[in-house]
Length: 471
Image 1 (cartoon, rainbow, N blue to C red):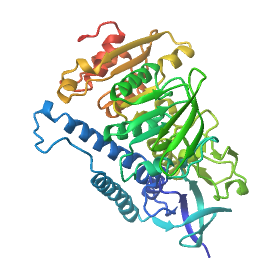
Image 2: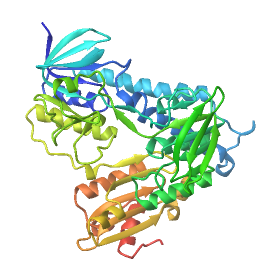
Image 3: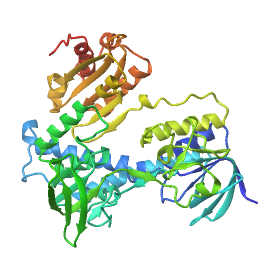
Image 4: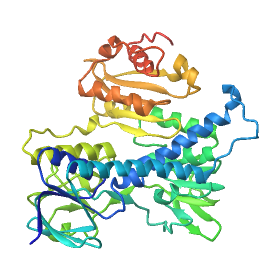
């Protein structure tokens, strides 16, 4: 007889493991099928955590390189990066966090079934390539996530033409690196390896870097990147990439329509991620799909009863679904609570914060200025630079600004966009402001401690009313 559970979760990433823990907290008997050697999925093992660890090392190197300004003596020459120690520390961080998830599974009495899962219908899940067995559950949650994808003109060989999976484990700093794509992955690795000493070129098909962000943020990032010595090629299409034993030759069509050729030690393909559904048996079971993604409703139900799906693997059919760890986790909580009979509400995706950990950092939530105008709002904008703040001057982090987009008629905050120090932390206040439908006046009346980076949010609110205090 198959081992029976209330809930089986397929995948132990930030969506799957959170769904499992919440379901167990609510009294469900839960099993998670995960084939990787550790729990935590792409975020903990391949994505968010290792890349941000590398970025922290890059930031540390930046501070040390300016040691004289800080009054710190380095008597033995110029500072340099030790990649072996970088990876040792990064791997220690990753291992600690994945072991933490494993502990939470034991604490919550969740069974980790090590293997690959296939949906068999009627609540059954076949586990193969591991602890081979058949499981059965009243409810199944698919949380198989995503993986790097390329474009037809580029063949990834994982040696010279690589993905982020290889980029987090490079044993040496490449002499030169071309990055294809300027989304979060692309600009974060540009920041890392430029600071480590690589000659970096970033190629973007669209007219600006980080194209999902507010146009002012894109412009500020490009200005900063060029100041750092990163070569930026926007409106440029890669037509071919050819790898040899020593380098990669990238052929492209520039913004002016003319062909160009670039040679580099490595080409990092950062053109997005695709769903992991191959071999899952979803289509065979009759689950509605769209280009490999699993179609779900607002409560993450698939077209097959008692099968739900969350995270990077889904589409809601209402535009691009954000492939973000914190989104997957919230979706996991919602599904677990729905299965337990708790009252739940659909997630408002316009209140999802976006965080990009490049240098300078980017944090954003809500409508950009262009989106607000497209929707017919009479737009009110306030912007304030970090460089004016005492806290920013102390930290030596003076690039960037906070920009507030509001509705002039009702003074309601529609979006907040920031680039600069601690932006990935400061955006939490903006998320709360949107969720509570705050007005600009309410942000102005909120006391922000001094001296802090958060003062830029209050000052941007003042600026929206034409009365910035320190500008």
